Length: 193
Image (cartoon, rainbow, N blue to C red; front, side):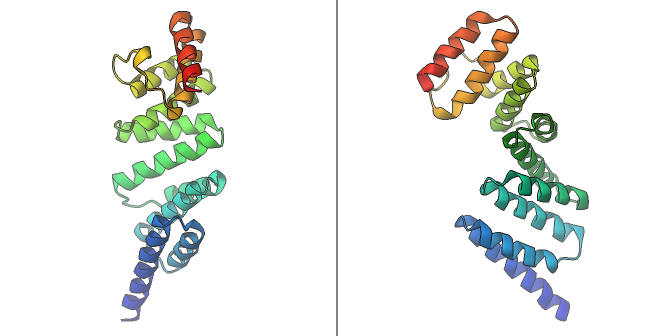
């Protein structure tokens, strides 16, 4: 009976931490999640808690701590559903990207894309990472997927979120001797900025 109440307490902590995360109270959520972690005993209980702590740090743009918890979650994985695993891969790719560790960003974004190739943001981040590591053909492939099949430069939406992928694709085109499209994209970037 005591174990039932311990589990209920862990569940209550998880519910409260989710409420805190919804209200962008990440410090409080981290505290609650760490308390829930102490009350967890199986890998299937521990993995999501470590993942959620990583998400809180990611929301705070504390990418080093986020990586720590995501990697720790991967170490304890056991019968984790594919959705949770893929989300951890994506979060690791994002945090490595913002830490400017582009090789690891590519590794984890590739793992994510291999499971679910539907999130265009993953292609954008991996394409930018490829460009930063000098793999211009990889960058072109991913960024063209991000902008859509058979995209036209003049039809790229002129929004701030597109500035980095436009510049990365422009540079990649120039590096692969496609100067005309590289220059067109540079002009597009100047309109966005």
